[in-house]
Image (cartoon, rainbow, N blue to C red; front, top):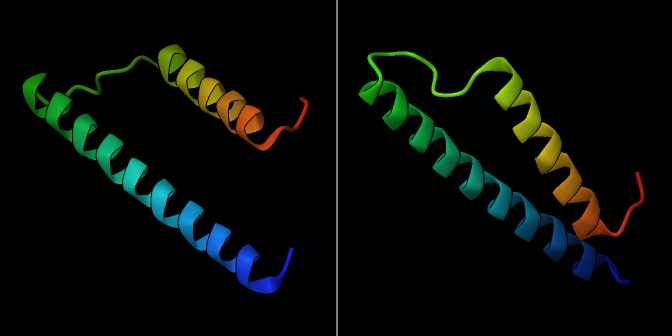
Length: 65
């Protein structure tokens, strides 16, 4: 793959990741405002969500855990 193709993939991935991150943060802030400042996820639910996100990333890149 040429350098331009790699650069475009990195830029696209960065932009998509940033947009998803902003949307998640906005949703968490909204939930916290509705729940009187309490974080909407427990520690174990947060850990599960993080592991699921990691697994999705591995599947998208074709890497085996």
